[in-house]
Length: 105
Image (cartoon, rainbow, N blue to C red; front, side):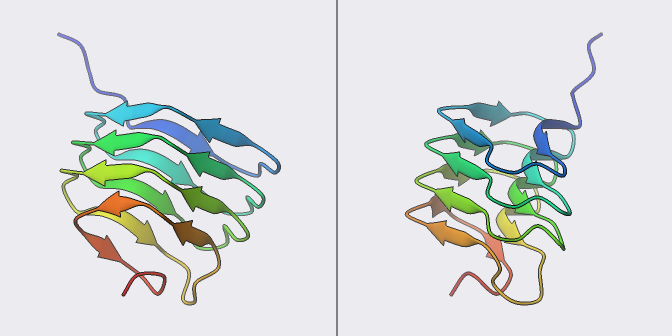
């Protein structure tokens, strides 16, 4: 029996990092997670689907990141989530069904 990873891509305390054309699917928790103290991270042209919690997540304290032209769908809680109290990251041209946070209408 194989176990599912918790998260495919987790960026912690990173800057000027770019992830493009990735797939994050079937994880126990999140597909792509940008955690505290990360800034200048770019997530582009990636797909995050069927994860146990969030598809693409920015945690409290992760600011100044760009999440552009990604697909997120079929994730258990939210497809995309901004955990800062105000919109601190650039979310644009993404395709998703469920969202939470100040960056999404």
